[in-house]
Image 1 (spheres, rainbow, N blue to C red):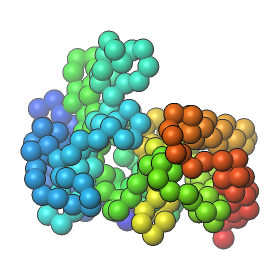
Image 2 (image 1 turned 180 degrees about the vertical axis):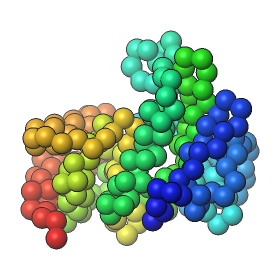
Image 3 (image 1 turned 180 degrees about the horizontal axis):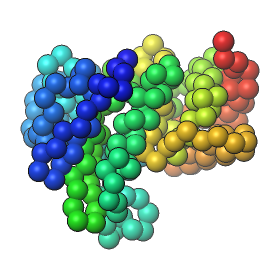
Image 4 (image 1 turned 60 degrees about the vertical axis):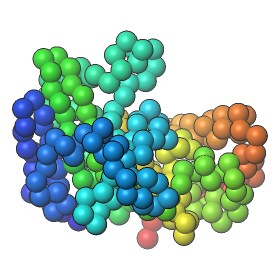
Length: 253
């Protein structure tokens, strides 16, 4: 894990790039060029480099490689009613407070804490007079599918539901508030390791356990929503009970 001294900021025109110098030695604006990566043709991890996906929240992601590394490029988009007016511009003057820079630093902090999250590589903010646009690059988690995709085709046994519950509890014990904990932001690898992704607007949150229970309720609503609109979505109350069993029984060593 890199120490904070290896996180550097480069400026090119109106673009500011925060990056991990242990992973990226020469950050360029081209790294964040979605059109450039979309033209790539080499296949990896069951995806096509350059393939665009809308599979994680509101974000649009592009997969690409640099050397031996496989990366995911996420562009930040607004949600809600305002998205029809201002698609991907955010109000703000301070670069360090931008969504991309905050998510980058939170990912690094969580990685230091030993939590299962993607490795943050670089974040870019393109600044205008009053608004900015933002992107984030992380290392790809290989051979992984979202929980929603897995449940659309497979039944998870009780042990795996408990693993998901234990994973979420680890984040909550470290007071990590995931702003959009849903079935698309939980990844399962082929060997059934659990990761949480997409920490836009997430933060370290102290206080009572009320917000943690609300976080779990948000996930359950997401699972029920998928179940209601997907013909064969393998989620039941027994599944949820197993998740809660794993959550409530986990004690950090």
